Image (cartoon, rainbow, N blue to C red; front, side, top):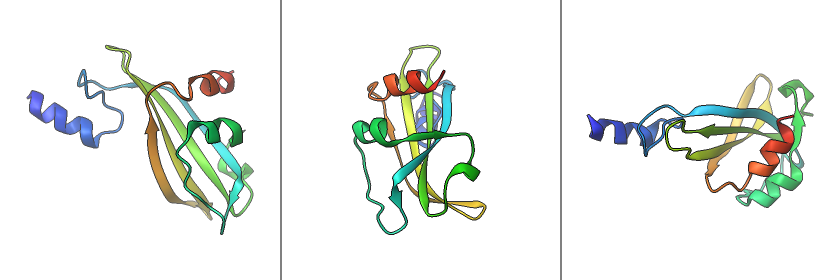
Length: 119
């Protein structure tokens, strides 16, 4: 059974690979990326970029046409305390999302940003 749980942690994003249990979502917000628009998107994988450039929005209707957005989801394991932040960068197109990339930060790089935006 433990082997199947390890495999599940690879494919199931909200699963703690250490404890093999569901992680709790602590923060889920949508952000606009004002300096990333159609034609000038560049992949950014540094936490500093996201801390300095994301603008909190309530929903996709507040994101201007042609501007990229980022969905940030922070999860924590209730057993061991392991936490990770998933970023999904996408371009809102009509009623759909054209996903560019998704990646994780799991060393606390965005913790202060999340605390500031959780109020």
